Amino acid sequence: GAEWDFLDDGYFSSDERAALTPLVHEEQAAMERREEQVEEPKEWHKGRRVLGHGSCGVLSLAIDNASGQLMAVREVEVSAAPAALIRRVTQELKTLRRLQHAHVVEYRGSSI
Image (cartoon, rainbow, N blue to C red; front, side, top):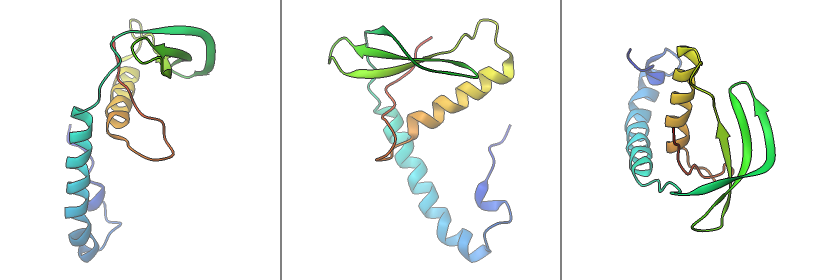
C-alpha cells in the first residue's frame, strides 16, 4: 500500500506544509544515501551475554571479528512468525538503516 504522508494529515497548515516539504524530501534523500553506505560486518560471533528480551527477539552482545568492535545483535525467529510480525520487523530494519542521531547507536546491518 501507499506510505502515510505525514505532511498531508491535516496537522500542518498549507504554509507550513509548503515550507516543510522540501526539507523533508532533502532529509529522506540523505537517509537513503546513508542507507546505501551502511557497511555490514562480514563475520561476527555472538557472546554469551544476553542484553535483553523483547516481544520479537533476543538482544545479545556480539563482536565484529574484523574490527573487534562490540555490537548488539537481535535475533528474531521468523520461520513460524506471523506475517504481521515479519512486516513490523522489516519496517523497523528500514527505519534503523536510515536513522542517524548522536544519542542512538549505529545500525550495522542485518542477515537472515
